[in-house]
Picture 1 (cartoon, one colour):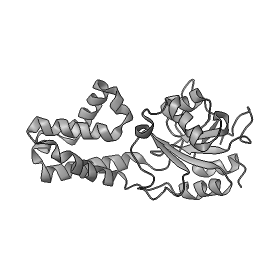
Picture 2: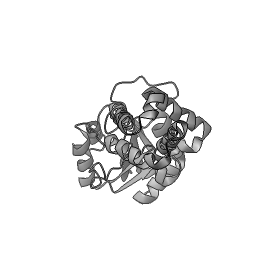
Picture 3: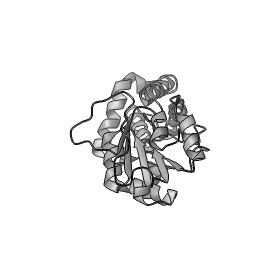
Picture 4: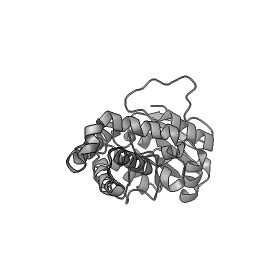
Length: 238
């Protein structure tokens, strides 16, 4: 594990924010299962959609939508609802299917399995007096996950109006935590959003690299960890 480098180390940190997907749980199987659950539901209730579109084709439709309407990239809920409206239009269904279909998806999307190290470390950090927040570009709801008691605040790209790596996400986090940027450390798995965004905003960045991915050229962070448990010695909590 690499500790925080100079510029004050961790002694000035008063709050931490955590990415959700792929930082606190493995999100790929969650999304794949949720999309399959929705597809199966559509095949029963609105079969003309699944007669026309494969699961892969529906995923490709969403990717095209983001290219055509970049703002949807910061609102995963509206992106999925818009794709459902388009699919309905293309086969002659009305839009009444959108809300119940999305409800099926979002329920399945919240069937996650936290990594074993998540809750013990978050609780230890809270006990030590750190303000704890979540920050995600996705549409996972920590309250729906039963994690609301762990976080002092939770931010989504949908609620802020723009996602990481835009510095506004981190600025809003600092306001909620009542700290300056240099007093906030952000933990996340994605170099392009978590690390780049955090460093642009002037906060400390901690790369959650659970799978030992090689560090790409030019990638900078203040610390690299392989598990949540690595945070405890980093913050002198062991």
